[in-house]
Image (cartoon, rainbow, N blue to C red; front, side):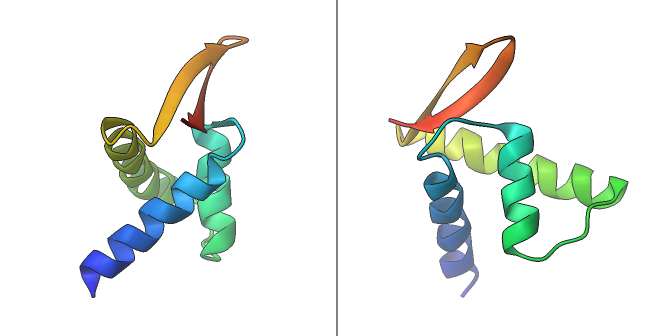
Length: 77
């Protein structure tokens, strides 16, 4: 069950990256999709988790990143 949820979230993040998105934009999409309320604790906890997913998806060659206008953007490869 947990593995299914992990895969679901990874696929959700992957789908968000169909178009270029910054980490902050991806984080907002996650909060909106799962009806979470942003506060400092959630920002740090969920933000750290999302960064791990982004790293995993990058390692799997599913998404890539580049720097545009001094912002890091993620996108499907």
